[in-house]
Length: 313
Image (cartoon, rainbow, N blue to C red):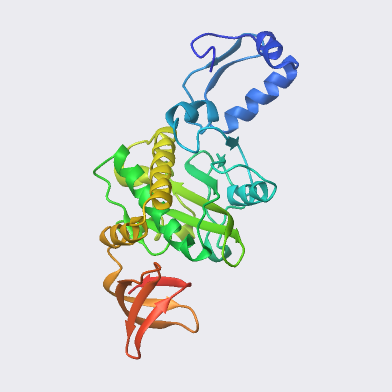
């Protein structure tokens, strides 16, 4: 990045990072497998042919200054799960605002231990550590706020895209999922120790495995344009910071989040749904209760959905 317009010899690069020319060659080969465009070879030197769209701390930090996420950004080319990394780090005292990003996940997770398809260098796989002075009962509202933050970030980049919020943790375009949110916490009965909010966004995917083709999409596929992951990730972290700071500082923020979530979701009122929990049941959605749980009207009366998969019929 420091010599992006010039050819740099393998010897020079080796001196810069304190290693050998053969190790530089190995590292260059590895970077190429992650989509970094590097021309040249050991005898002629190397040149970056394009600024890589990688979620590197050096790229993101200037864009998220002033947020709680601007100091502790951790980047991995390949990781098992960013949520797992963040939960382990939080347990050992990592500060609030720590961000964990991966270009590829080999064991990405969604709700209910479902696997999250994490194509190499195509999406944003991001987990953040938060330590709010909130009771555990408010964690669902924080998860809904994360959904609002994703929607706001997408619209900041392209206002023509209108993501639909699916309770409690998915975002859709034209009925297909492009983002999932996994919130995990460590808490006592009345106090949250730490929360990890994991966000997976399909950004520049151009295909999906056969089993996901009918249900998944990406921002690139929907808009037919290539998106900057760096710009979108920066917009996401800034938007998430705004939602989080508001939730902590404003007494009316809780109700405001629920109101905005209902306004920006097509499924929360008047939709016939099947809830796959406790044997499953069907009914009509009737908005959110004061805690953020889904209300479903059934033949047996109003039922509150605390967990489980909700499918629109």
